[in-house]
Length: 277
Image (cartoon, rainbow, N blue to C red):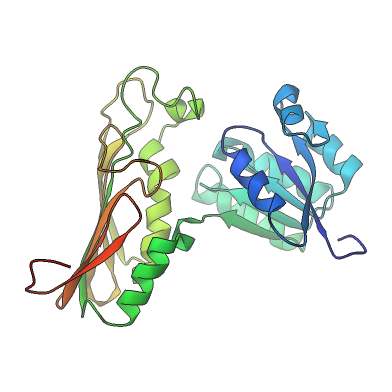
């Protein structure tokens, strides 16, 4: 950390989603962007930051306080190990974390052994509609929560060019629906209803150009008899002017009422037995 208490942040990865990370860091008091690294040096230079195409070179030259890893899972482990080897003590890593549970467990052990801290960038639980839903549930306004459903309907998965203009590696992910996308709602369900006690999944592939599944159902049993359903299909859409705002619609049903999340981000409470909210 600098003498003025400002955290110097270096970013690894300058693809589509990195713009949102950089924008957030730029608006955050106490943080300053130090550099950008991407194997495509043109992308790194396009950020307007000191640019590198090699992670170790960037870390040794810039000595940032924090490394923000904005890469697909396949690149996480090596990037984290390089950062640890260069003495970085604070790391933020984009979700989904690593390739599998065994790799993630090993990486966490290495981080702990190095006396470093790593945070997985999982942010859907902080969206304002889920914060509002949490407050209503905790206030008991739906009574005893019995069921929850989220229907993923971003409408971006049709045709041979699906995802190529934004995040082309989506086409090559072998566990696409769950590992890349549903992980958002797995974490959000944990936030709203507690750690699941059982999970069942029925997955399929709709678009043949996608390597992994892009549709399916995941059923969760949560504490207290609450059952939740993630119903995902990236080839279908929902009523919204921006399909990426909520990426779908949700229902939280209790014995005293039902909460509905719509595509515009609004949350509506319909008391049990009533026709309207």
